[in-house]
Image (cartoon, one colour):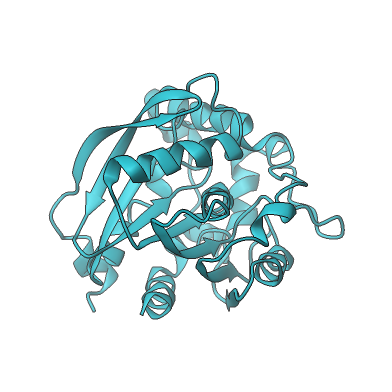
Length: 269
């Protein structure tokens, strides 16, 4: 398999817009696509598509067609008024899978993208056969609540997100105005979809119906949503298996991309 550095030298992704029909209306999704093979729908979290974009070519180099959509409202895109929860967004993504005419799809999602992937999988679409949930929010755990994200500064979010925060620390004052505006827009979209708690008490009633082959991956150092939530996902989804990465936090695709890639490849085999 290619190393992370080698994968990053691959050809630039194909970028396009694709329309999905959903109860919220017609939605234009911005997509980046890498590689060829079994389709992986790679779903980003609250940091936006850039939080998974570096991982996509590594996964594509392992024999997958990796489709990275931008959730409407993130990265400067528009969000229709009717898309106001992860549940409504999941239905829109079912329409996107129809527009892609994709089959044997493996859903891979991190953070709210992991919650979204589980919501999509709960519909048991014949197009979806696999699921990988990575450090997902979404479930309520009273003993180990999800951190109050919207009360934190971005610096505090960084401290709680990584096994080695110093390697990923951002100087927000040094960012261009456009980048700071995009981050603010992402935060607003995250609030619209996930609410202030980043969880839905009714999710537990849906994910026990998931029939897709499921892997749950968690960073042991995740202090945004602790590994206790990973154990909850693995126990609630029939047949799911949990893997914990000791040297990762909330974003294993950035801290330990090779390890996450290997787990996904093994799961898809």
